[in-house]
Image: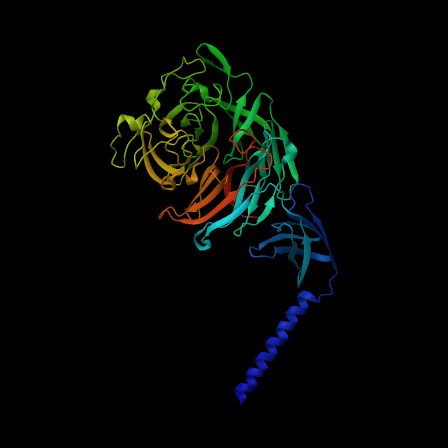
Length: 516
């Protein structure tokens, strides 16, 4: 009997405690106001800015409710807070929980924020595989560009695990392609046009806009270095190469080092100095596009640079502008230089060897045939340096073995012995998919540091029925997919061809935390 009485008192105490907490959070005498401004800077429609005024100092946290909630806390104490919200659902009356944390109590309120539909040209996103427990954290950020009758409208986006777009930045005001989409270490969104560097926050507020020297045209890659400076792929005005005694304007064959803090170019590398500009086995666009540089990776241990050239392969150059090696089929390499009067490039070509260190035959070295356990990367993109020092790259497979009969794209890992000048294939994913992942252009691959998974983006898949892109996260150890999404393009303002600006493309994707 006494036990029952004791239990009643305990339950009564718990009820009183719960009511006290509830009242302290929701029936506070503290006065406050919350004013909501949706899309405050006009280019990020799934964001909002809360202007919170209170009679006492407080800080705030916000939570966008939904199947994939987005929550963030802010440490600043003030009576007048400006609190950013990202991750709203489109075409929805969003419910957002706002918690105001005062010195001795909390006030919890739920506000409603109405949003509009996403633009009509956005792709239909289908989630094919989702193993959240084995995936890298974060959502799915896309460096996506929409066809606009020969130009591109660049509108990077982030979608969640249900395939719902939760953030995007409409950069179509630029009128041309702005890329690549990335968040720097300080949280800034940085993207470039041909002559302008844009810096934004996640609400779309422009933090900085810098015009670079008009003699340089930026394209394809901007890489943040550990010290905050930028390596940028560029073409240079009035840079010519000599082919068959004809002077031809070249493009996409310089790298610049850009001092972001002081907004100036402080160094440049001329790739034509190191390579054979007359080698045209993969150049089907125009003679001046002999390299088509599309990606960079920085090797911290020796401050060197890995360069990806769609029409030539991968090369490594030192910080002091010396060629280290060339990873490419050995066919048709001659002398370096814009006038082809430099050094012989052949000694710098890596020799392909198997896991036992035995070289493959000459047909493999020249790229005429591929082996089950080795192939070069054809039309490569997006080189990355792995923690073990190996190189990860997206092998587009464009014109593999000098024909169009063996089309597949893949992520591939290589080990390079720089002393012996040898190349060994360590790991790959994608060859077994045949042409289901084949993307002749663009695309990306990333190493995910927490799970050690590999994120693969095939950005321009053109099957007979559906033009699409795929984002796949693969368990490195098992080769099994833990995430897969298909983005079905709509192509409302193009002809669905590979011509520039005539078809939607997904240049790259990243796994990214959606936060301010």
